Image (cartoon, rainbow, N blue to C red; front, side, top):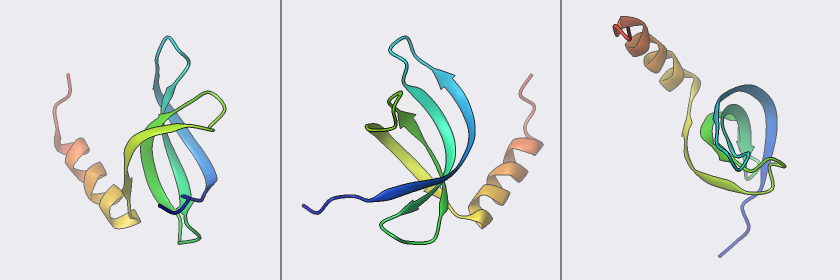
Length: 74
């Protein structure tokens, strides 16, 4: 299995943090030299380890924003 390379281009925000210091973050990440995508996943405090997550294109984030705006989250 080949290594996964990534570069965090922008740290957008932290959604939550657990007792061990891992944070669920939204970042803009370039995976394996490709164009950056929005990425939502758990990260260790030093960003050396990560959990499973999802990546989204600009169009997918825009659609997600539309869906969330239409929801009544109260």
